[in-house]
Image 1 (cartoon, rainbow, N blue to C red):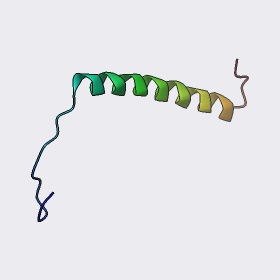
Image 2 (image 1 turned 180 degrees about the vertical axis):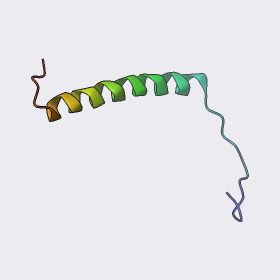
Image 3 (image 1 turned 30 degrees about the vertical axis):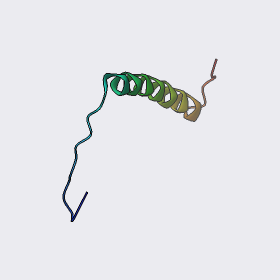
Length: 44
């Protein structure tokens, strides 16, 4: 940014998109695990 305006746009690579998808999967798994623990269920 320069003087409050954008000067360059950075594009996301295919590899970054792939990593993001993997992170989303792990995040979903962890969210489910947390919910299981909150409900007092057994984690196996």
